[in-house]
Image (tube, rainbow, N blue to C red; front, side, top):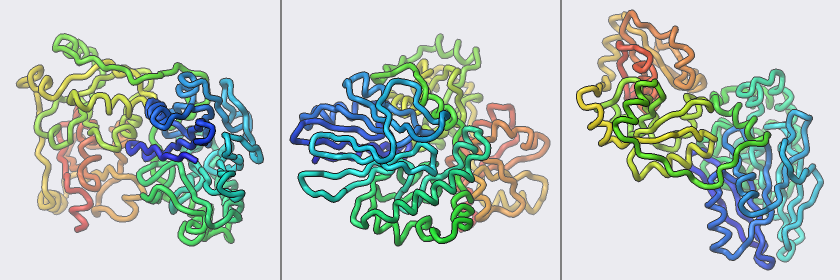
Length: 459
């Protein structure tokens, strides 16, 4: 058996290539959209990709199943569980719990594992030449390392009312079935630490059924359904806005993107035209570089592992946009955007071009210290705005601070004062820089950034 984990740090998303070496054929589970990664793995190992599996209709990334099928001719095996709202609307092989899919000497048993979503399935792999016992379980967003999939996304992100309580009950029942599996079975989940698909995902890429029985909080509450559901739904992170669009695009027939596009470097005339038209410009430099010289109206979203998620909070799927980025980072950024379907990137300029094009027009800001915040609190005439998530704020915050989550800040501008000084902060600076750029782009000129944030304050 051939096995390789493909891990996308930008979305904390795992996909898998599993092959039968005797037959020279392979399957991919939950592929990301820039599928050249899988083609290279198959080529390097003299394999042909013939099967594509999905564990569920994803909310956090745009699946590359259809791109991969178009390029390889592989068959897609997708869940036929759930009601009519959770059916794929393009040609595929329909699978249900109890089905078995052969891949040479390998067998994948389909297990229906609803909870995170109604149509969720897991794949139990048996490597027939080696053993008659199953060896691996690919769980998607059902069971993670130390956590389980959240059942509230359909309600919180997609607006489908009344689904989170049903999902919690289904998750409880699915976990009872999971607990019956052999302790030795390896568990390979769809996400790791940093994903918004759960609240306490572990950083280790895999686990076992037996280990999760003794350390996963959810499996400790299988004798109390009420307590389980309450804990499962409590303090989940805010789901990014783009999740609702992913649920739609992963289900319907859509335009395919079978290669990473080449992005145009813009000249001054093009950039002037774009800024005059009011198109969104995203500054991907580290926030400290943004603070040292930025163009008002641009959004500061640093190219790091959270880039995709914040872009999904602030961009729609209809608008064109431009990046400020170093040449060497443009392909990486394009891939990150592809993975959530943000395909309307029409060009970029480099930081040196920004300095040249906008000489004399750039603004700056200096982060403030804890002492300045303390003095403002004593004076009592300043609004303190904590832009962390609600669960973080609940655990501890500066006394008197208001909580306005950065991802929803553009929808809550009326809650930010223009009449008195405003100090914003997050945990350690990154999200506050995004918030600062959002507020300045919307005409606020009374904002100070306490970049040390709660980490500095609580220390």
